[in-house]
Length: 332
Ligand code: ASN
Ligand code: ZN
Image (cartoon, rainbow, N blue to C red; front, top):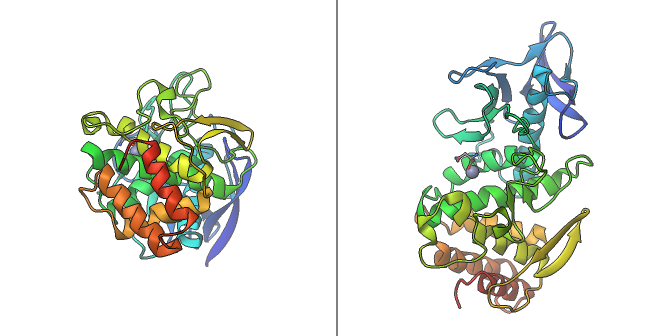
């Protein structure tokens, strides 16, 4: 007998959650049969191969502590399920390739590994356990960030260098935020911060800030000629900032208890249209306008075209897209 099960995950970051699982004989495993059979595997500190599918005699996964090897599996499985649900229910896309087929996650990669990554070659994402202050990299936003690299790769295919590389990274941060808000989880609340749960800096600060990217000390707030020469995790800054401005508007604001202060490069105000519309615009641009070589100027053109298609060229949404790009020094 093989059946669809609904397991319980005791996660590190998101509390007790429901997980998609399967039953095979008297054994349960982390195969999400309602989401393209997305699986979560244990690399058990290895650095190659697919790892071993999490399985056990009961349908309870992890205990909330990183010392329990199932806990990272529960977090990763939950993050993948949320990201699947977001793309399906909000953006109308079934899975990373749009074909209903799930990917898989690998947790416990290597020893003290402080990163996570997506690979097209295995159609899978991988998480390290962190080191020192840095906790396991299995939070909702990191999962959504990595899975979105798969979506980008299978749509626009933004080259991972130069300005297109920054737009590729920003796309992952944008949908990381969108998924985190969509999750509505009371312990890992939606925000415009990236990786705030991991404590990668050891002082409670996130990896990246979308309202004012330069707060991380390296990312840029606005476009300048030459931004294509810096690391893609920093040249993403202006596009992350664009998304924040388009969603929430410029100036100060508190969302879910987090305070933001977003400047514009031209000093002019931007009125936000809400993150739902902003994410719809970015997704439609990613999937119908952007190509492997899209740069900042072309991203402006593409998102404006989409805003015109969705809301009309005399709409408040269209004006907000114009103003948000102007706010990061693109197209003025
Ligand atoms: N975690 C990083 C990322 O997804 C890994 C990398 O540099 N590609 O961007
Ligand atoms: Zn990335």
